[in-house]
Image 1 (tube, one colour):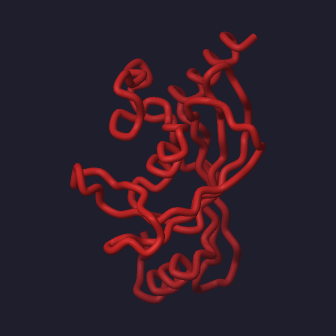
Image 2: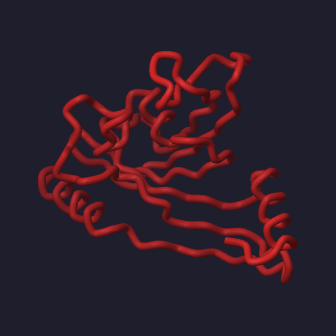
Length: 163
């Protein structure tokens, strides 16, 4: 979205050193014992399905480092609403990391359970906050995006069924 080369280069540098703040919200299957944690696992193309990404052991060839921090926002019966903060931004990172620890994103037909919640008509994964230093002015800017209707409706449904 940069309108000139100087801005593009400045934003790219911030992405490279992981100084851009990105917070996502997700509803995942299952419950967490801890209130926060992280997944630090390299990602690469799945050997079984080239359209998918997969977690690999450290040092595996053709993989890239990936880190997803998470914190519990709310707990429901069978699901947890979490906030995820990324150090890296790999393809499908949150979806793959959460599925790898047994907590796939609700509504995810690729990495989730075979009986995907079709009524969601999408994944319960949303880019909530983006923050960075403007590369020209030096001003810190932060943008917040409200949860989409299908996401808030699902949270309302979970609250009602968890009472």
